Image (cartoon, rainbow, N blue to C red):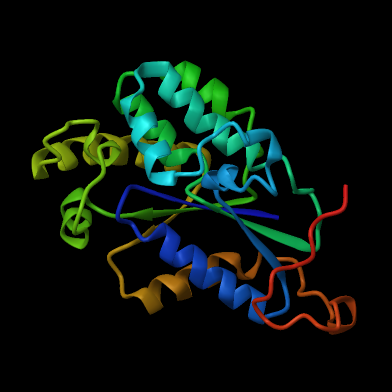
Length: 231
């Protein structure tokens, strides 16, 4: 089962992904978080060993790219990290931190053709559940202490206005997609506990039954990473 959390920068996607992983693991589910930057893990992704193992430098290089080349490498990292696991397995839950949504909206805001972007992301596995954490850009700005070039629409001033302008464009696109594609919208302005409760409520009727304790490895403790998939 694939569960994606989407949202603009500052919505709390990563925080909620990690909290959800802990809750589901405690209930006995085998849970993995799929992160596009795992391409730097050469043990797991040896075919990506040509990349320099410096995440900060990789992000800076991508931000310096122009147009479609930048979008393509974002989508490439996403696609690569979705190739190592048997995503159809009913006994596994895969959590997608952002998946394609934020990057697609951001690249369209930066001038990429919307039809090309949507055609590209349709090649990726579709999440069984997509939860959109909505936050106004002004509130997202107040949460953050620093800003990346991409968060500011590649405006090198990284000013408040640059951040707000880019995030407003992204949010407008994400809200429209949320309505068109049937995502579940949750306000990211709520208390953390209320957001967690809302996410649990969305998933309550969608999750498969937890695996029985007999089906789990005897040495596995709650939160421990599940054994790797076997092709």
